Image (cartoon, rainbow, N blue to C red; front, side):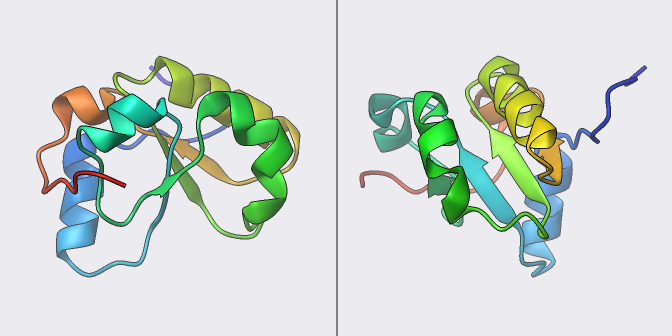
Length: 106
């Protein structure tokens, strides 16, 4: 059972919401080489180590869906951003379980 202070959405749930046309703010915290090999087309790329320096780029009033390869780094990003007052959602399973389309390259 999820007892943390923020929700978790499965990759399937995120993909379904995008398919239905919902506007989601997705932050991919993987390394540049991982991003290059395939990411959610609507995602913004901010590697985990850059989150503290780039948090000001994010809107604290919008739910941020945090994504990595399997859910560990996105969990760390959630912990940090939540402590700073951001609304976060973790996507456990990450890109390793992503059922939707992917964009490649930059």
